[in-house]
Image (cartoon, rainbow, N blue to C red; front, side, top):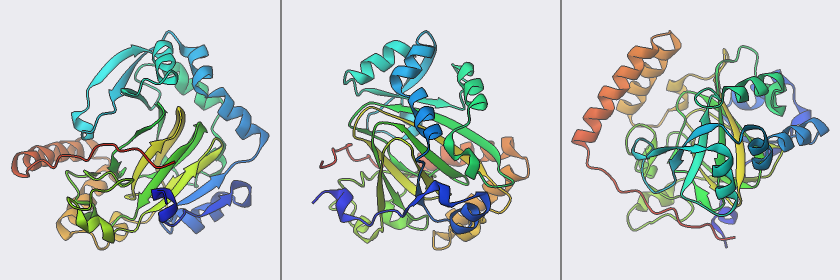
Length: 307
């Protein structure tokens, strides 16, 4: 039996069954993950426009920064500059050394930001009233690569599968102890093939899983841990956002270690009140002290999923 089959599946619904208010009330306000299936002609056309080959045809000459896929924490990954078209060709041909995270469509290819603004993704109709501070990220991942197990902090995340097939494994927010958290938002565990000799408490965790295909979007609620495996070359659009009716970080993190819960809430409140620079500086100081005082935990290898 594969790891995907051995865990409960995340609920799946048809997106046309919801409007903004019902989606916000039924899932966002409950901090509950769900897979949304978009089955319209618009969704099919939109996804086709953002396939790897379609992106390369429009932006082949753009220079991008790609990151390593090796087993290290986010802050330890090396970034390299690559021509977008040539890099996509390599990824489609089976080069698994790097993946592209196009953060906010601003850093290297601003034309993508304008393209997205003119043609919003299918889930735009479900973004809650009062949504603010949206941050969109385009991911292009080679086949059989995966992320670390991490969370996105005080943001809800709508992650649209644009092309290819990916499996998402989610773990509820309070389970820091079971995940052997290292730093503020990462775990050293490969949850698809956990080493229970090194990390025995992971057996007490409660993962949920979903495999997404083009036109499906996963709501990853704030502070939910997640790890993602690409079965084939894949494109995802992830939009993180806050909104006026969201649950507080203190509520979501009930059950987490008290010191972590308190520090996280303070940082979230600083950012919400506009003190972003102060929050970021505080986080950098905390990380510097943490890395100096806490022994580094070597992450597990990115083992393959059973197909």
